[in-house]
Image: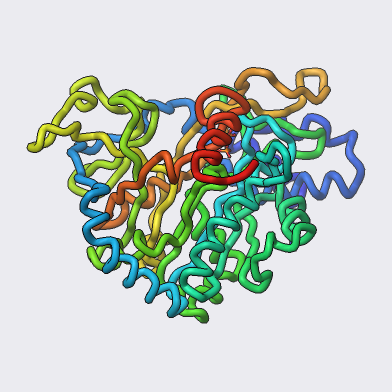
Length: 410
Ligand code: UTP
């Protein structure tokens, strides 16, 4: 039995959200039920946290964590690669594409992966990623399971696109789609927006819920049945992303770490990237805006900058550890975003400026729950071309330049 009107009213009153029933009387019977169901399913206990956002910021003690740098990797490339290939051939490595985001900064309506970065030919972001993964499939002579996380907002278009494009040559049986959870979006006072008269405004709940969503969608069973012990999680928007990179996989395994994180040397001490560190002695990531002047300029014993390796959202997690971690609660991040909603008069608006908050869990918080992490340096010119914006820094333009440098025809 789903929630009735009175139960919904009680729940809304508890969280100060009665306004979402403003148009209830105008709705059809079906729409009413859908709204009640949505009210029932929505976690409203997290919303009031936006009223004291400053309390969510970190409190631990930050100290440096040394990265494995390019020269050390070069010296060991053969043994690392051999160990990685062995794990891949044994089917112990899977990949997880995080493609549930809204890509609002890029501004396209379609899923980000459907964006065409080609100039004289079609070359989609998803296609670039599949091409990169295919390099490893060829090298290893083994297919790698690829899990693709989508959200309610882009699931169908993503799945249809892959099917229409014949999975860009990948083996369809090795591609598994799953949807992440949604969270309500609010105005700056923590009041849930309406997207339609009978629908709460929701957005994907961040990329940190990927493992729980994988499990909730029944795919953890496949992970177990196939003997997958490592999952390489990566973002959709880096078109130079190396996926299931044998050398990285091997290094993480041989160094006995439970997670590996690909990192790049910063462009400048104040570049806006999250940096690997230790927080209270455990691996963690400090956001660029949390770095103090003193930390930005701190040096290690060799005289190099101590906080100089930025994460690129490419992590190799040990599945066993993820399962232990599942019971613990992840920290909440509250971010200002542009959220389409109804205005006071009930007309739909698409704001030009951030107008409210989204509530997210982030994959980087998973690192802090683990005991050992290998920050693994990669050459940013060869492996880091994120597409976040339409122009300027981390944009289609900058990614095209880097793709060309790496011999990709556009
Ligand atoms: P971003 O931080 O770039 O967020 O995501 P976004 O929502 O896609 O883009 P903007 O901020 O609105 O422009 C980093 C990676 O995490 C995925 C994205 O798809 C991207 O690969 N992600 C993000 C999810 O899978 N789910 C989410 O809820 C958020």
